[in-house]
Image (cartoon, rainbow over all chains, first blue to last red; front, top):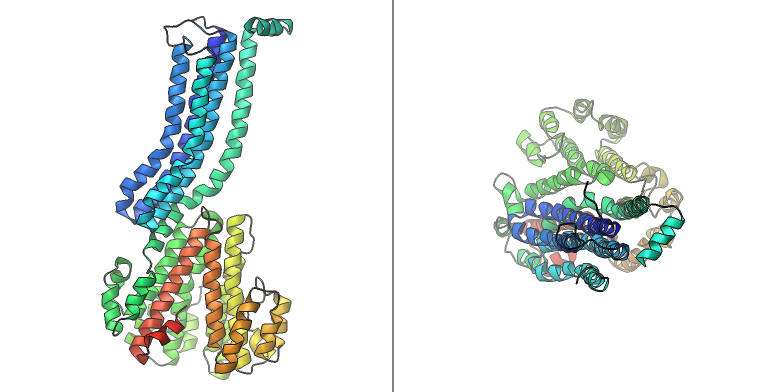
Length: 161
Length: 384
């Protein structure tokens, strides 16, 4: 069995939390948006492209979580290359994962609900598309905050560089 | 810090593996709590996403004010028919049926669609609502027999929607209203009509039969929505309850205008309403005049709108001013409810109310253009 340092194992947990919760939020959000879009497309075929755009928006949270998870795996030495992390850095890595994971969960769900509502508004009135996109983009900010804090934690917590 | 942590763990006799396990367990617990908390609103919203998108798409296809103005400007009802042919929802039945019948079919299909797509917690109400077409067909059948219409004329009155359409079509061949009631044996309407049959035989008027069907429909509608368990069912109950109240108030006001007494009215009134409860209904039915009915409604939403219409009633002595005021109240109330829960029942209520209003207004315009050739401003006055 490969020997893994305690800090590296903690970073692995952080990576799991990052993609796990961000993916959960993103998946729920996309599911909600997709359910609304399917209803809209069933009534109006022309809604397909716009439905896809709204459904794709909550994907970003999973991408942030995925990126952070990859960075944690690479810099903790789990994917080969660098040396293992000490326990302190490992605990920071758990914080990194929690930061993007939970922020992505809330952001993804919120964005999905806003997207489903916007699809309903657009199918009712075409002119609502641009405003719908703006409203749907707003819950993205929470994921961006989580992503920034995760990067800062990695930089100043001794994981990156 | 790592050394300090290791020292602390060692002093408590906790090995590294156990520490990792504790962290994993703590994260799992936090995760489970978060998932449970976030899944509740999602579970409430999820069943409404698809129906709401579908009804909002249909709501977007309803006529706006500008289109209604264009319809109003039409020379005659034939021009309106041609105008409606330009819209898929309206055009699909116009080739086979008259314009009024195609509007009735559309409304029946709307109720049927909602009964199919409505989420399970509110489905029962929409299933009852979809039976409006059956009730309308039975009433048309009875009316056609009473008026001794020919087979073709009677068939033309039936709306080809609902589970009883074929039965009603077969019953056109019957000779009497009693035969129609017998032919409906086995349906939920047979006992209702049998009970009202004696009154029909006594007075030789079909009103008791029609009234019994309307009462049965509204009672069923109210009881289907009568156990509100969450925001969606509460909003739906208030919408249905207000419709029952309005139906009761219309019956009472019209009956009082005709000089009827409590015993004559009570059989046609739904025994319990939403804002106007049983005891209040009794008071209203016992009122001596229309003014005292309006005064008796103080404390309800209906008081200000009926008080406002009272002046116009005193001038015209037509109860239609109250009926129009109540119809407008229902439209405005449905509109306010539709904004209350935009991710729940709101859009469905908004759509059904607006669709009913569209069909009602189109029928008013068509009838006015066909029969009366009224001025545009007069027709506008009649619209809800």
